Image (spheres, rainbow, N blue to C red):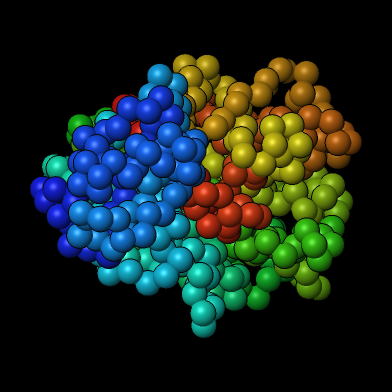
Length: 480
């Protein structure tokens, strides 16, 4: 998809469609006013008649308006100018792009006149790309080119980098487990590292054994496809400055193991590597943006399958940091993979860690499907993550990490067990388990079980993998 800037007046744009915005208070932006004037006031009249909706992300098409060269003008609602919620640019552009992508179009011009072009460009790129990777009849058709009115080349480059990175994370999640498994995911990391300029190191099952990653290996031992750990290094910051560590859960398919999931709960479990996909997308964006920072990404990859070699309830595992773990549920596997991956990050010398994982259904029960849970051992770092998420419009909410929750993961057989006592506080007890493996390193855990995979499309994005929190991670790194 080619993304470029244009100085052509909206009524003169010689493409298949143009996009303009409309505020709910009746004010017309410069480009919208130009189309309105060229067409004899059709937009203002239709807004007055409520034939054009100015509600945020509502889309209204105008076919062949008089005085406009493009055969189609799309008006996207922007809501109130006095109440601009974070994420407006990305969602409004995405909604218009998703509407236009319902059929193949070569050239679309965006004349939204919004304050920030970078998230709008990313939103448009995300909006026109769907999960229909294997359909003979596509539902969404990415444009050949997108032109942005009066946007500087730097914003075009930055928005393109962000949009491509979010779509890369989405593609990894949307591919079936027959194509994305630990080895192929690692190979994709190597390819992206070579293309975009970050170093990639892959640990195979033999290296994991040498490193005594007993928890990670246990999860993968029931699969014919052995586990991997991938370490991605981008070190373009101050020499000697400790890097930020980004850690992602990468269970490429989760059957539940011997604690087998029912079919309806297993169908979308290709998405259980969304945390790893977000880390890969963030590393790709950070590298493409050439940010002057030191960041290292770690992803732990495994398939949780059923076989005669599967790890069992009652097994006692020894993690890389020496802690012993009694297995009470083989479907609480992501925290076992993360246990060793977090320890790899800690011992690599990072000074702060942010991990992302589709970790618990309990987080969805607590916060709903659209909100991520934040849990941390360091309030300052958690505040930084929350501010970054707020700025880009990705909903997140902090949950408590009271010491009392630690009692729920104590084992009578080993140091800890891999689930809490019953259903209560499951998102937090899972985070307390992870806390056992970060030591004194400042750390934030983001449970993205809800927003990582969309059962239904939204106006600005197709169903399936959402690429959530790639943007938040990039924003966090930029403001480190």
